[in-house]
Amino acid sequence: MSKKRTPFVLAALIVVTTLIGIRIWWVNATRIETPEQTFSMNEEVKLNGAFIDDISEDTNGYSLTVKKAQIMSANEYLQRYSRDGVTSVEGGDVPNTRVVLEVEFKNSGKKDGGNFNYISSWVVGKPDKNTFYRTDSELWEHRETKMAGKNYTGIGVRTGTSYITYLPFYLIRDEGQEFFGPAEKMDSEFATVKEKEFYYLLATKPQRMVVDIHV
Image (cartoon, rainbow, N blue to C red; front, side, top):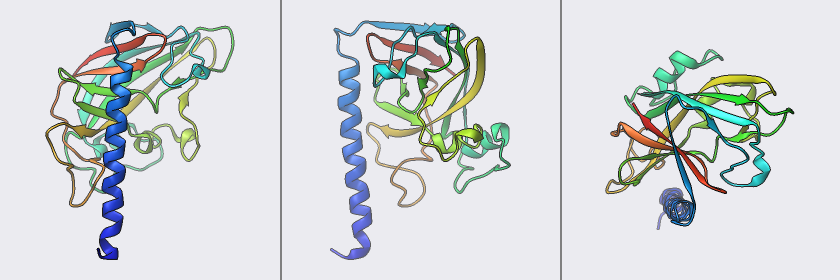
């Protein structure tokens, strides 16, 4: 095997491993014995300590409301929401590659602290749950410039306040399709979003909490 092909082989192995992990995670998250709550857009979701990965996320006092959902290109996102002057990225003109949720976070608790784990939240396509969308944190950091370059996964809000942000998600798996996008791009960052209805997964324990999303 030539040395030039080795990085692509490794990338493919990483992608396959990631997809297997996602499927296992989703199966575990949707096991029948886990209670599930489904909420609507524009409905306030009180997290009450529910978490995605770890109880240390501390969502007590936190709530969120999905106010709007849109589908757009990466560059459309930047042109609308960027705060650091960046209005385009390479490949970003490909249309309909991001699911963007306008979300209002609120902290009604008695203390500052805690957070909502935005990195581990997922958007999942309906009806078969075979498409998975993950947070595009790099794109989002052009909006939330204070987060740029920091190893931080949670959205924290001061007590007694609320904050609106725009979370972009991109497709990382579409069952029945190969990996897509510009030539030799393995992560599907510019894959076209074909669906109009989704679930937004907010928590997995002690109950699953999802928001029913439609564009």
